[in-house]
Length: 308
Image (cartoon, rainbow, N blue to C red; front, side):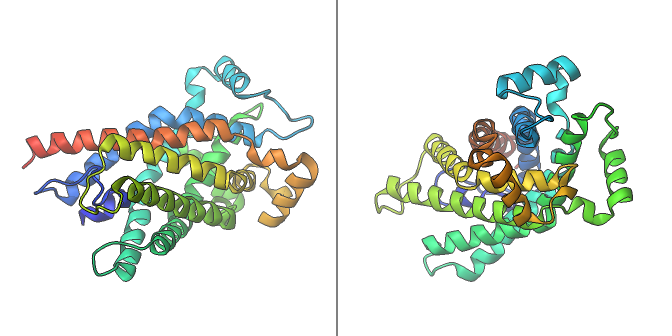
């Protein structure tokens, strides 16, 4: 059970390796604490990224860059304005992790080689499958509500008073489909995201081992590899992330579908519009992986000492 709730690339690479006696409950609690702390630390960069992606050219343009976005947000809404939409991610972190890693393990069991490893193509396909599953069952509704929360704050008179209140308004006005905007874009984003990360992580790990399968990769090195993999995924699928964000915004109705959204952004704003928010997203993803490894390992070490 434990394997369903850990980072798949941690297996056999010296990162957060489970000690004897670990239980699924320990992994769930440690992973939950890690996810909560990680989100609280990195969420402001996600907020700024989303604001910049929603900031279209023309009369509605509000920000001149990252620093300007932060200054105006803090001035208007206070420091905690940078955390609008945080509750949505906190509420969705557990099912998101369960779907992603549960799907990966299920696919891995079907594709694993006799020696217990996965080929490069196997890692790509398992990562792709896990990303698609989490997009359908967790990420799309969670991200849609998050983007609508952040977009709501941009209006003169914000309507959403909290998570449940906001979801209630969205479902009442748009139906259940209102929280499933941009599904195809999210599937493309999550699928490519996981495929890229698994490919880069496993390739760098193999290069470090130099053909010696028994060689351990230090946790700090694995964290560095994770940051590189995260950066690669950012540059690889930021255009998809921009389209997904627009499709999930409060003005998503002006786009017929994902392809129409892509075409209108290209036609009206140019190719560089697809890379809005790259810097803050890059910082968030790199921090995400590094912080996850460090905090998770720390909590598991403590649990193994005080909880036999």
